[in-house]
Length: 102
Image (cartoon, rainbow, N blue to C red; front, side, top):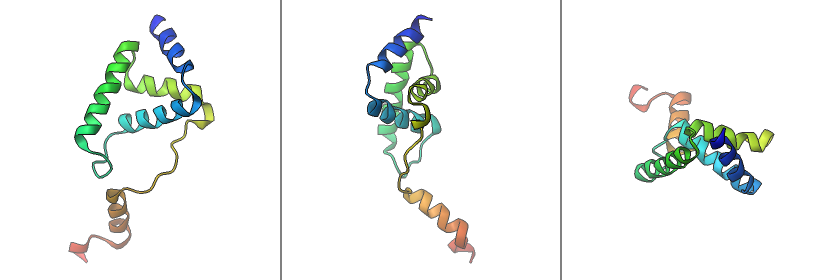
């Protein structure tokens, strides 16, 4: 498969740290958008850039993410990050209930 060979060659030219950062970005793009963490326009533009890259190799975003993850093995784990304001609010409501209904 020609596209897979090109993708493997490109990934092989990247450092492990670059592949790890790429994996985190791709995972975020594939997982969706937390608008409290991202500028919506910037997110959509970044997603379009990655989709174009995927088209160059003939793979989807998910396949691109999975190919990067395969090069990382056990290191293909998203690093811990602080909770976004939306995540913090959801946690607070889950624990104490919604303020309008107390």
